Image 1 (cartoon, rainbow, N blue to C red):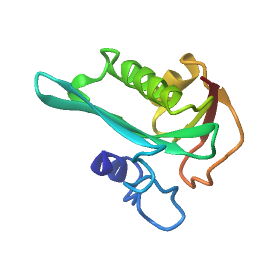
Image 2 (image 1 turned 120 degrees about the vertical axis):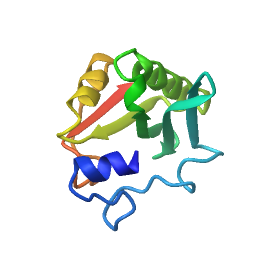
Image 3 (image 1 turned 90 degrees about the vertical axis):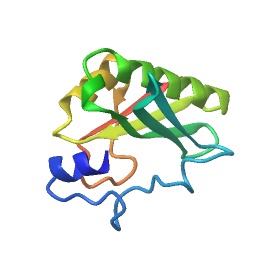
Image 4 (image 1 turned 60 degrees about the vertical axis):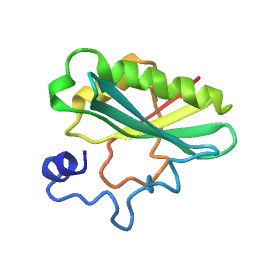
Amino acid sequence: MRDEMRELYSGLDLQAPGMPKAGPDELNPPKGAFLVGYEAGVATCCGGIKRLDDETCEIKRMYVIPAARGRGVARILLEALEEKAREFGYVTARLDTGPKQSGAQHLYESAGYAVIPNFNANPVATFFGEKRL
């Protein structure tokens, strides 16, 4: 995922100062998680949940390998992340994506994410969405 984002966005460093944090400290229990989906023993997708406050989480680092794209894997992953967020007691999920990821934006909008103002100061993102879980 990092390599693809770096290529897509001209050397983008997801760990750079000013980028929203989404590492092990943010994507681990007790109020965070990182899911990995497998097909035939091969990791095909991943994504995380990050706590923003007691009722709101952010979905981060959603990724589907190129070989698994176009088969609904991203939608299944998004639904699994939303279900995990509900298990943690979150009632709202937020997310973002950049201008070169129109497929991701389409997925989020079709899944019910409404446009909201920039909530996380992501300097690369152009779409910010929110959904009641």
